[in-house]
Image 1 (tube, one colour):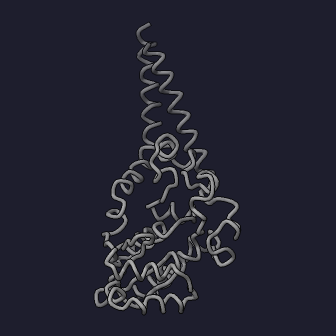
Image 2 (spheres, rainbow, N blue to C red):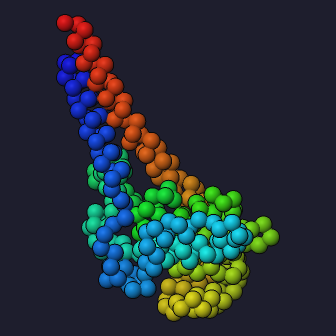
Image 3 (cartoon, rainbow, N blue to C red):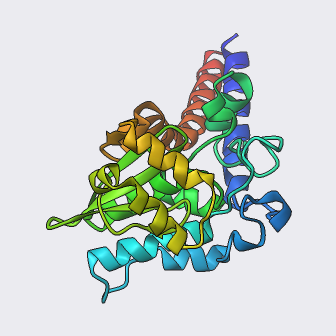
Length: 269
């Protein structure tokens, strides 16, 4: 029995390790991101994968405010706005592929938890690499990148939308990385001046009911502040990071256990 368990442990460990190694040769960036599958069509996805990865970096000459404003636009241009519920979750890697992280994949394939079936990354590098998402993805990415540069910020959620408010010390600024709109003032200003919110979106070329919904929800007080992504999606935030450690640790442990069990069994003969 010990030999059997040792053999099974060794086989499972080697298989998982092989999956991980194969994943190192793959990219999370999905194919087929053509205008007809994107929310903003030909005005969507204006940056290549390499340009996106490069332009999210802060320039030495940029102030915190300049960086936050530019980054808001970069994320909107670099993240594809796939129609989230239209396609099978495996088509655009909404469900994390097994070769990327078999733990997150199994959580999406074997459970009924919608957050894992169509996954939203919190690790900035993974979000940038896959390059697709909704307002929540864009806002968590913006928040995490601002944190890396020491720029205080909060994630703000309202029904149907998520944004970020940056705090530069002397002033605050509401940022919408989903639409690529760096607004001029902080949230409370637009709560008290909702018509200004719509006009500022119009200045960026947005003339639709989306901004009217944001205006209405703000006016009615339907918004909530979150202290970054770790507060916004706490359990998933830490589970994701732990899973990327465990996905390598588990096969190594299984291989070691398998080798030891087989060695001990042979020693008994």
